[in-house]
Length: 89
Image (cartoon, rainbow, N blue to C red):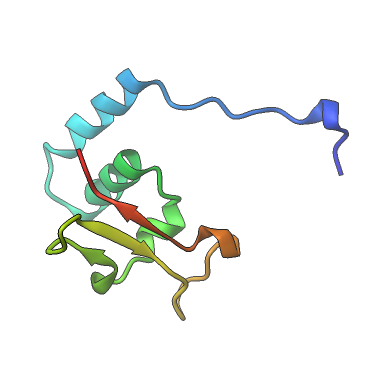
């Protein structure tokens, strides 16, 4: 276990860089770019986004949402990782 003084904090990706990534994701219509765009828009972990089932994305609700649940093909990092992400804005 590291000492408390040895812990480093991860810095967020600058917003300008995220916008560039998102714009480039829109130039090519393929699954890797959909995945990167989903992660950059929602803050999901890569494993959460890559392990989504079609039924986990609900676009016809009053508020569109992504349901993050464990699946037989993918477990979640923690029990607290189970959540609903509202797609707004």
